[in-house]
Length: 73
Image (tube, rainbow, N blue to C red; front, side, top):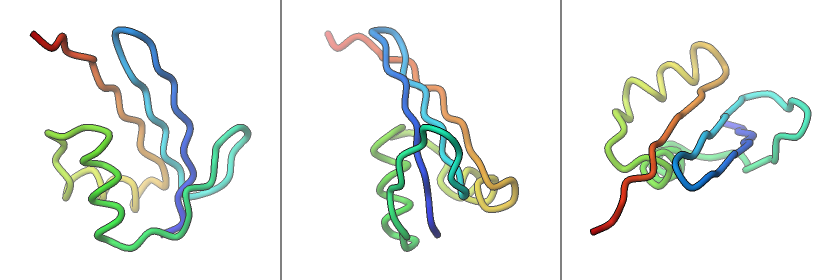
C-alpha cells in the first residue's frame, strides 16, 4: 500500500496524518507491505489496534492519529 505521511509534534502531543494519495505537504513513505504497515503504526502508537486502524486506512484512504506524549518517570 502506497502511503504518504504528515506529522506535527509538540511537547504534549504528536499528530500523524496518513494518506493513500498525495496531498500538499505530505511526504511519501513508500509502498509498504503488511508487516511494514504494522511496524509503522506500532512505532507511532504502541498500544494501537492494528486491525481496526488498518481497515479504516484502507476503507477511507486516510487515517489521523493523535498521540499524547506521556511523561516518563
